[in-house]
Length: 255
Ligand SMILES: Nc1ncnc2c1ncn2[C@@H]1O[C@H](COP(=O)(O)OP(=O)(O)OP(=O)(O)O)[C@@H](O)[C@H]1O
Ligand SMILES: [Mg+2]
Image (cartoon, rainbow, N blue to C red; front, side, top):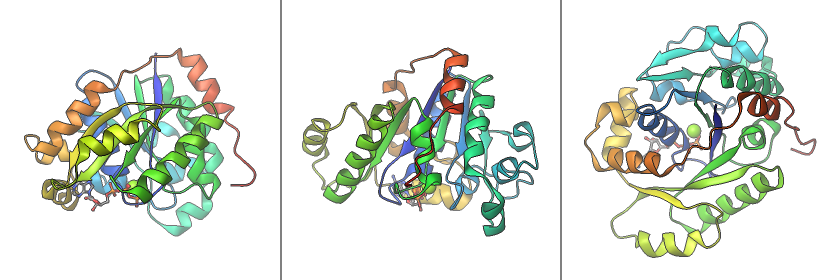
């Protein structure tokens, strides 16, 4: 049984990659978790997970030069599928193959988290959202970020992808997050999973090339990610159904 989530936002830089790795680590206490860098154009999950020197990556799999198993690494209690950072690697990669990758991974894990690109303007950008069972929307508590997040929700819904919840990130103390969350929740189909504080530890963790929960497990931001993970009710679905949904995901022509 498995569920596939796309960690998405609309706006760039809201903390999708940080959140994918942090949620993955927190969920790994209870589940067998696989995180995938599905931001194949601007991949950087590898820098958050101690995998900057990974030899074989998702790019090789998407170019049909390697099997999925060759691009999976056991790190921090999770299975991690990093993506390469070279432009040549991106050029040679067929984004549509991500569907088969997810279908293959689904056979052997409980939770798949797809770190998604920002925006909705390319096939690469939309595919994780189209393929996932549900999205987790990462928002900074600003009007533009919330507006972009709503567009992502609308897009997801139009492809039958549900909304698991909202994760506010980089929340400053002076932002009245409870008020913002209450108002925002009215427009989203999922609950607020947590509000992650703006945290120097998060930036430090990235610089150290480690997930926040490994770098500073006791900090407030790490605790907030653990709360988010405990709020996330995993809806375990039949592996065949999930794999079939991934395989048959329609890649919109326009995007
Ligand atoms: N809670 C936080 N507090 C402070 N800095 C944070 C927090 N979360 C993430 N960051 C920092 O913000 C920057 C962007 O984070 P991240 O790469 O996770 O965002 P992203 O949404 O994946 O970006 P992109 O849209 O480019 O993929 C990184 O430098 C990261 O360390
Ligand atoms: Mg990212």
